[in-house]
Length: 307
Image (cartoon, rainbow, N blue to C red; front, side, top):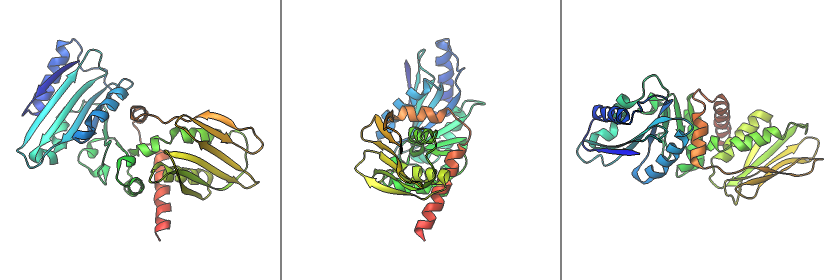
């Protein structure tokens, strides 16, 4: 891995450095499938960059990490360019100072790969309206993480109110194994579902989102209840003919599936690292219609509860 530091630089100089480094290594910037713009603070940049780099092994990318520093300082752009023969793409850390902190979109625009999709990712605090954020407006896909907010439940409800096709949230991505398991549980007839409850740790934004998805799919009221966690711990679906369909997870790896008239089954239901969640989201660059339907259902439920 070759690292090149540029202080008080410009986007043009950064682009020229990327081209020069790639040609020096005999590996011009081909084969990269997207530009991933990661907006993060200094404290979170290490973990975010590690997750993005791991995800790029499946999706070779130009990774632009935008770090907004002190807006009271003089205008300055510092960059750290990383390119390597074994690297899955290119990495550019951009540290913005002064008025540049309010014009990050102007800085990154010349660095976007031509004719490839742009994905914006906020691992920490995200804008209230991601699609109208200057960086979000450049992206076809926008990934937020309500779990990183100080109030995860309020954050995911905010996503519901501001949803635009192309938006998604990692609170939804974390639900993929749960949704797959619950869908598979209905491969054998179990009867009509009258209602149910999703149990999870206090403040976990995935809980109400899973309840909204289930409510939409089953056309039944699904409540949310708190448990000791961690994360989601149980889904209980009450059946019209009696009994319950239950998925219960007591650790970070396995769950128990219980259905009336069937023996309990132990099934894999592991908690996944951020890099795997990000890689999953990068597999699809078109709008996630199921997420859109579920988040709108959550908005409708929240609206009823607020009346």
